[in-house]
Amino acid sequence: EATRLSGINIVKVEASTYVIAGFFAGLAAIAYAATYTTVMPGGGAGFELDAIAAVVVGGTSLAGGVGSILGTVIGVFIMTVLKVGLPYIDLQPHYQIFITGFVVILAVYIDIYRNKKLNK
Image 1: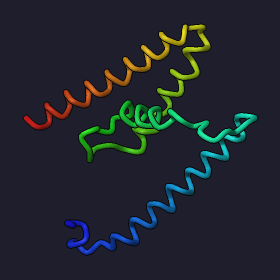
Image 2: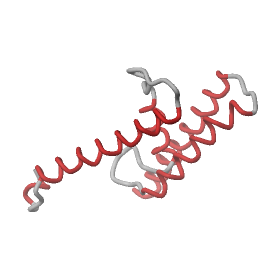
Image 3: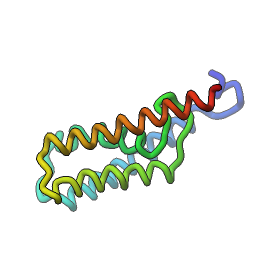
């Protein structure tokens, strides 16, 4: 409501947001299809958790409002290194999940600590 009252055309912004998101979802689908030989419906299930983890590791606050594109790109890089690098060193799958989860929990803890420090 505050956005509408400030004079921003909500319908236009919302529609353009969906268009941009759809474009990048299509681009991601093309990249996924190029990487894997078979594409199955539901093949990307679970990727949303990886995306959220990458954004959190990149420094975006779960409380909302604070984050940057560069931080998100760095978070994606870190999560990709974990996802590709841990199997490469022959680490067992349950340890891979543990280490990835630890990195995400550490990022959330740092975010909570940073928010507490800023609010004091």
